[in-house]
Image (cartoon, rainbow, N blue to C red):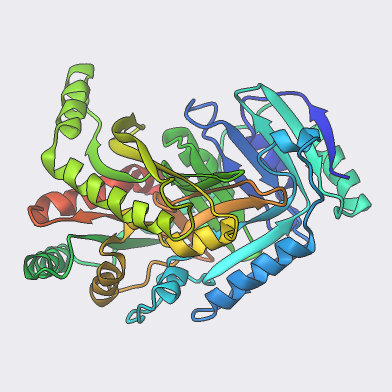
Length: 446
């Protein structure tokens, strides 16, 4: 039976991850608390019982293996147990790279990888610390398959975790971030995309550029530094022996609770102001921007179509359109699309049918992805993929992996981009791509 233990509530889960970070494959699905109040849950775990990875071209079969792994450890019905109220009671945690989406959409690869990562990495995690900031509650939850020795070790570590961490140190860039794409090529690529749009190939194409820098030290220290500057409700830290993922995403991809499905695409971005008056004026400008609203609506329509592959006919709705959400460095326009999952579909089926998220591809999705593959000089690795959990009792949540850095040995990588539509200005799009990652890069630059 699933076991649950109460711990003292804490507003910051960072010490919990620090307490288990020397165990294999540590993960922290980070709400952004206490720096932001937008997120609800923190989920911390490590030491998965099994890990699935896939090289390029083999992601679809690995996704099928993940479904089999979840079924192998499936939990008996917990609807009458306290575990039913938790987002996670043991299950899958991991990430899906953008390359998996290329496989699912049958889009040919043209460019080398930008970061040394497999196409996907998914582990079965038999325990987790869950911090529920809405209920002001912290619990340890153990799946029945959790080995007793691991359970005892985790209990001791989590109960001894300090209330807070010291100031982060021990990570530094050896060189500034350098763009793989020159400014001239970026503007030329935008012109090429505008020609495709004029010819009727697409309505919108999401184009991104890649940056990298030499680095030394512990990426965990970089994560702690950055999360204080850019708190986001769908942040995540995932570590392996060789690599680390540092994600500060503001965007939900797909959530499933019971048969209820929700996606919340972001399309439309503007920088924050330097004063309250300027900030309010910029927010108003974004809310009333015909271009940004049209861009957002295109992706809402795309996602309604994607959800329709897995949802009950007639159940798809748009309860929120063009809502303003504000973060440390930008304002966003966010919409909400919902539906009810069909009985013959699983959350993993839903992920596969919708992946990658339309807000980071363009529309129509496949043609936009073909143009991205043609023009972007290096592949996106995890960027524009997704970090997710899927509990054995059926709950799932996932993000769009934007505002994301990957540390793979002696280099750290990040990406920034935006949606290109027919009336896009190449210079404005170039500046937007920089603005989205500027805070991340400036915080780490020497």
